Image (tube, rainbow, N blue to C red):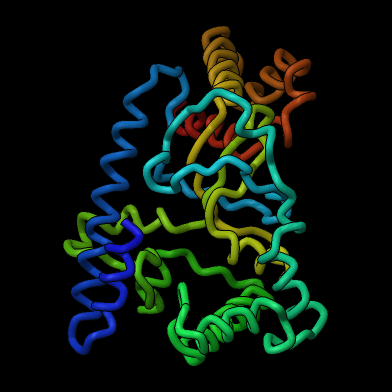
Length: 293
């Protein structure tokens, strides 16, 4: 798949082929995403509905760690997975990308002074580049990071759908438009920052490492994210919240009183849940029910 991606990326640089090749790749990605979402969501019988296409706006500071285990941001979307994968989380601020951006954007270190830049230049000069074939390509990518950071500093964050509308998606697999946009644009969110949810509700970064690091460093209040994988114990918490909501409704508790009812009935468990009932993956359950009452 990596070789195919590299071939398509290179072919996309040829005059007149870039747009159709990017559309072809994004169409493939769309079909792959929808296929796996449908397969994953239909493979379990949990009480609480999984909404794989939903986007949540949350503070980037709520995502302090990244998953040590690797999940495919497309193929694993909608899965409920047991095990200890949420126990080997890594602090994002200790990662190389965060430290690199911190030096450049907070401590005024030039790219040319960083180890990262000089390693990339060395690979380009020795004819062994893995990603950037020329210095110009490398500089262009770093300029893009600077542009994103400055945009984030103003408090502005663009959804993938907005970037597509403004024709600002320029790379392979960047969430750009596929063929038949009226049928495929609803999956543009597949390239938003992706997180996994651990057993206690901890949000673990899965994809979007550059944007998340820049958002934290720029002090953004909130960013759009989507959920890829949930731990099975977390899904059990969601199921229990649904049970309590339905129990409260059946007993005639008003919509306004349901939240307090669930808070009281589930208080022993909520003490161990990050953000409690304010967790975005729990808040959405109340929103769904209140809309239907």
